[in-house]
Every structure is written in C-alpha cells, then in structure tokens.
Length: 142
Image 1 (cartoon, rainbow, N blue to C red):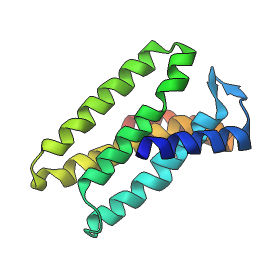
Image 2 (image 1 turned 135 degrees about the vertical axis):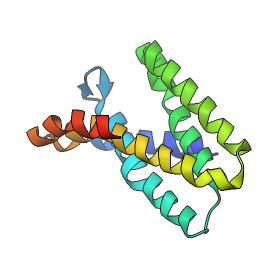
Image 3 (image 1 turned 30 degrees about the vertical axis):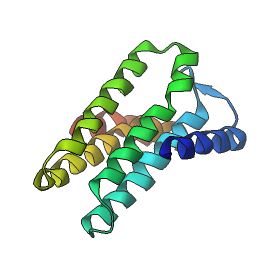
C-alpha cells in the first residue's frame, strides 16, 4: 500500500517539476529522494523514538520507497541501480525478523545511510556550488 503513495508522489512531482533530466535521471526522482531521505524518514524515526510507531512502519515505508523506483529504473535500463534497490529491499526485509532490542540500531543506520545518500540529490535540487563541494565529504562520513 505504501508503494502506491510513493508512486502517486512521483506523479505529482513529475507534473510539478517536469521531466528534465539530470545525469539521465528525471529531476522529479531527486525530489522524491529528498522527500523520503530528509523529511519522511527522520520524521518516522522521531515517532519511533517516542514509541508512537513500530519499526515495521519504517521498514515498510523504506521498502515502498525503493520499490516505487523500479518502473523508472527499468525504463532507464539502469541495471546497477536495480540491483542496488533489490539488495536494499532484501536487507530491509530482514529487519522484520530482528529482535526488538536491535531495531533502534538498524533504523539509526538506515537513517544515517539515507542522509548520506541525500547529498547525492540535494545539490541538484538547490543548485549551489558549495553543496556539490560538500557532497563527497558528507557521503563519505555517513
């Protein structure tokens, strides 16, 4: 069900921002990534820490985010990103079977990895030279 929300979000962003390509990817893909990595995932992490949601919601949302990329990646014939997404979905799927005591650490690592990954998208959204220069350092730290 969450995948439908991300597909809908992709359609909205495609209408709003067009299909201009950046390094072969449509600009709207960068906006969807930004939304998930910088807004939605940290918000879910915050709710998880307050015990308002379970780890299952974070895993399901993250899997849906990756799964919603498949139509575009297949269209672009980007086999490396498809493999990356399949592996990410498999790893996230194992999270459902971890003990409750380890959930916090796994979700924290997911948040850190996605934050680092967001710096691949952020410079293309805000188009500031300093962001392009900071990108390798922040990506490496995460």
